[in-house]
Image 1 (tube, rainbow, N blue to C red):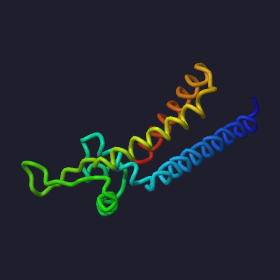
Image 2 (image 1 turned 60 degrees about the vertical axis):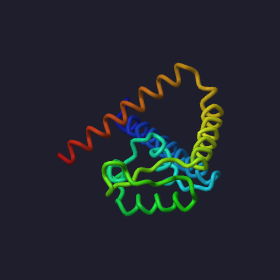
Image 3 (image 1 turned 45 degrees about the vertical axis):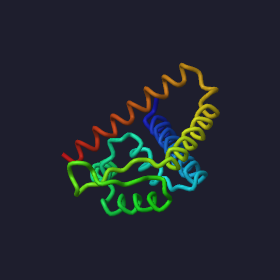
Length: 152
């Protein structure tokens, strides 16, 4: 295969991946909006539901500022979706839990997401799903390795 044909296929694959990524983000934003949240609020709500939520660690993992996470927490507190209490044993930290309204909101988000997953992915064969997951993992691993080499 000529190099130019391969390069054209690579660029077509990149364009498809970009389109998929943009659609995925757009869909997450739309799902969050359906229950009155931003996508960032949804991420924080999900993390709080795990009961391992620590604002500073969440900010680092998401490459976000502590101030941005604090702002999101205040928004969720104002919407009465989370409850904050002083962490036992360490009065300097707060422990966040979902309120009953927060639990309902998260349940509805998960239901809406599952409907979308069932609808969008249902017609794909097992072979297609396995191939896609394998290829996506290979690309993600290659991107991570490239990033590590570039920033070593």
